[in-house]
Length: 266
Image (tube, rainbow, N blue to C red):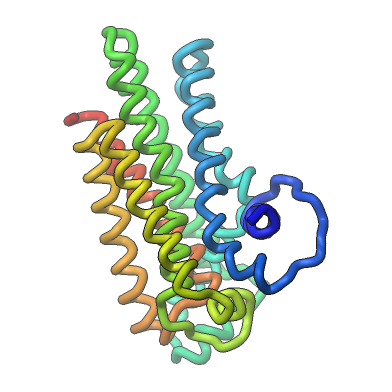
């Protein structure tokens, strides 16, 4: 299991891991360890908000900027790369085969640059709003409520990776080659059970922290999950590693947008 965790972190994060020879058994369970990367990111997001927003009370803009870049620094942008490649492919309006070729193209198109800029602008704006409203609540004496809402948002980083992992294990693949297809071929029913346990644990943890917020964030994530399946099947004939990255980034953004609504109404 430790090898599976090391594979997950070395593949999906920039966190240094020990070097060892990969074996099929470890790779088989690496997707089950993928949510742990989200746990690290979620814990880091919560810590950054609490330290700079609550304890040190630094600028809300600075805190929001740190919260925006931290997930990218941890992942190295691997999922954002998939998001940008998918945007280019979807914007081409070409055949499925040509779109799959665009996903493999190392060059960045204009649509990817435009959508990437829009993504980070919206993400930063939403994060700044969340920090502002939660800081206002803290000043009014509602620290516990602010902590609960931010806690649910942090759990979302685990939830999105659980759903991404489930898609890798269960969805139709657009290509028969590649790391995603190789990983999917190695999985067994135990891997799928572990991912469903992860899913239940995420929802239960969120509900313990703040039930209403947890149900809203979970609902958004599941809606994005089914949209991802529908879009991938219709547009590409199945999922790829790039499409999994696209889903993760879009799910994260929409959960953040949902959190903006929650901090105003819950």
